[in-house]
Image (tube, rainbow, N blue to C red; front, top):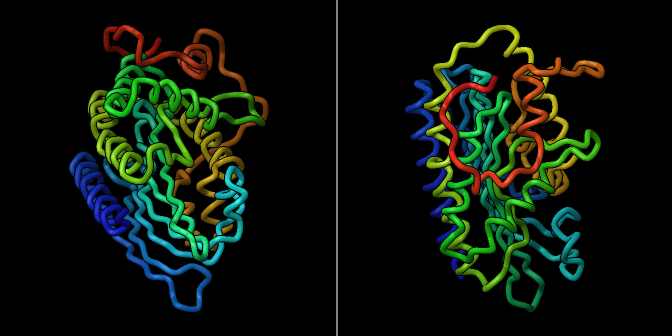
Length: 313
């Protein structure tokens, strides 16, 4: 078990993702490195890398953090009550990209390790992570590609993992107060300790390494599509759902805030602009309505035949 190896991998992953997205965007990400002061509740360090008002990304951020704390917060022990009160060490990379073009989907990815350090006992370590896609306008080709990339990343670790983590993602990224999914899903896993440290770390590396393969082809297909005020208004409306999920339901947000994490980095995932409209419904037969009828519902995307490319109608 080597926490140093996990840290080195995560820092390299952050660099590779930011380098690729900078090349697509054309505007450099700025870097905000931070260290927690000795008197603070948490100890550790991190590096936030962010772009705003870019050519591709209206706002995008990719965070690395490595913290140690005196007591696991409640959000981390709801499935492991025997570890309540134990000191902990946590590190991870988390990103959210909010593109400017409404035809390019928002994407989220996170890979992380959490270790409880009970006094006089060996560390209890587990991994979590995944990635999910949140389109504003649906394209079957994009959803199929994204899910197949996730399935291929998990395939070496057992044929049952993708269906299990896909279903977990559908359940997790569901706005219970709205009774609707956040997007077309992907994969999600948490508290993963099956087989011990090395298998969990290997699987988590595979998920992290699959992100660019899953997302960049979609960006490159959609970023040149023309859009106008109608598409922008719908994008801002759907971004409101993203904000609601992150603040109300997301365990990562709750963990960071409950543990005394760095608020600026935790809330990096918020879009720069979003709107709410009272009881708004899309007109039947429109591309906006098709997002709800065809995409915001569970589908076995990885098993679907690839359709011809083209915008939703």
